[in-house]
Image 1 (cartoon, rainbow, N blue to C red):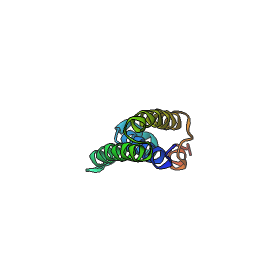
Image 2 (cartoon, rainbow, N blue to C red; image 1 turned 30 degrees about the horizontal axis):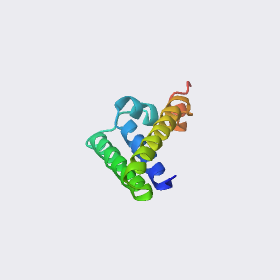
Image 3 (cartoon, helix red, strand yellow; image 1 turned 90 degrees about the vertical axis):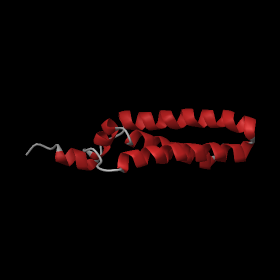
Image 4 (cartoon, rainbow, N blue to C red; image 1 turned 30 degrees about the vertical axis):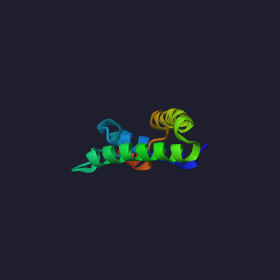
Length: 99
């Protein structure tokens, strides 16, 4: 399996998840201001394209596309599970502490 395609797709899905306000509030505790959200969305799509290119370079056109779809599945599940069941960031726990 192409490690670069796996890492690129994982980071791409993280960027795409952070471009959604709900997930951004979950991670940072607030919405991101200015052009950060559209930039994360564009970066996510560019990284997905780079992941596809890495898969095709590793395995060729036909097998690379099929392998890329499998890599996308695993990466999306990993990001989804980390957002759902992962620990909350410490700065959110401190800000929600009752005096």
